Length: 188
Image 1 (spheres, rainbow, N blue to C red):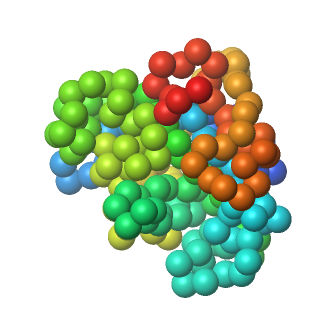
Image 2: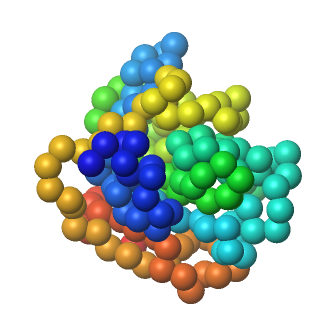
C-alpha cells in the first residue's frame, strides 16, 4: 500500500497503517529517519481532539488535506507532530508517538543530548526533538516537503491496540496503536 493509499483510509485505519512506515527528515544537519512504531488517533467527534470544538488559528492544520503536518506545543515545553487524515474541513489526525531510529542516530543523540537509542524517540516530544521537527514546519505536507513518509514493503506487522496515554477526556477509547513487542514504544 502506498502512502497516498494509507492517507486515504479512515483515521483509525491510518493510525494502524502508519505503523511500519519510515518517517524521514532531510534537514540542514543531515538525514534522520525512523520506523513509526506507535501512534494515536484523534477524530472529529473525540473530546480529546484539538479539533473537537471548532477550528482555531492553532488547530487549522488539522482541518487541512490528509498528509498535512500539525505541530503544537504541550505543557509549554514539548512539541508534538500529527499527520492529518481526512479531507479538507474535517479535523482528524494521527499523533506520532514513537519511532525506532534507523538513520542519523548520531544527529538524534546530539539533538536529545542522550545516547540511549531506545529512549531517543520513545514519546511524542522526544520523537519531534530527535527528528528536528520544529513549530515552523506546521502546515508542511508529507512527501511535498523535507518530511517524507515511505510505506513499508512486505507483510503487515502485528499491532496492539489500547487506550491513549496522557489525556483526561475520552481516555477509554482504544485509539492507540503500536507494534507488538517493539522495544522502542513509549510505554505499554
